[in-house]
Image (cartoon, rainbow, N blue to C red):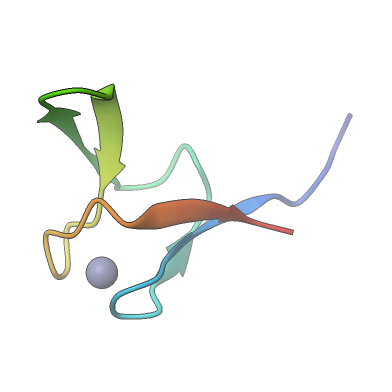
Length: 48
Ligand SMILES: [Zn+2]
């Protein structure tokens, strides 16, 4: 269980581990989301 999973911001291309310095935002319909601290986008997905 030591996968090197990363989250990637699809807007600016930033990558960081899920426990990194991502911010959390709240989406009106989707609830809690990961938010990029660099560009403020919530378009962040797990990179694999
Ligand atoms: Zn970004």
